[in-house]
Length: 242
Image (tube, rainbow, N blue to C red; front, side, top):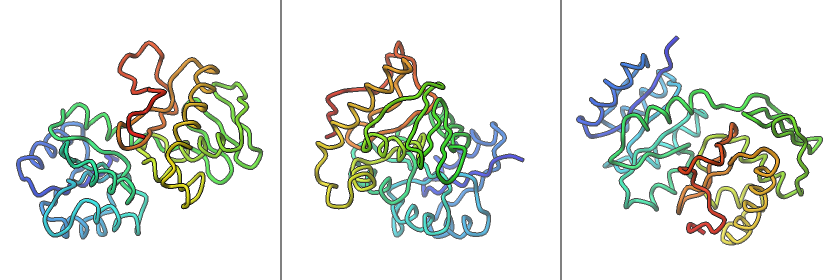
């Protein structure tokens, strides 16, 4: 069966283009030009993925994310103009999985749709399998490309949270809260140090990049890895977003 995609956007010209592009890829598409209508369709139709504009009158994309997250873990991609960084971060903290900045290329958006529909980690409870990785949470062990890796307890907790959310953009605050607790959400130096250490260990073991920087927002974990010779990788030891 075709994956079901719900698009919520108050700009008809955008929804027309998105509907046509997704339909060509054989997705089953529903359109809502009104946020409240979109939430009603979501409740009745149970889509596999949601694409929503961030800045809409009456009900914002942030509120849409919060509402959906009370009902389901459906992947959500938000569409945002470049100068709305704060609202973009709020949407990610509210439950969005990814964002695409307007103006955007259809090929990029379709690639992100495919990634979120296929990239759910396999396994539940204490074991996580995703891409090159296998983690046993209870045993506190990890294999990368079938090779065991030694991590400190905090490095392991950081990787486990990233692996549970593979492919998603995780904000700095969300990572700090998940790994160090709510009191650490305003101490980003923790994150800079531990992400740097984690990157070095993973890349030394497998020769790939796994933790991408999303500038001014957070990090994205790519469990299948990106080869080192790919110059497009967003990888910086000195992260300008922190």
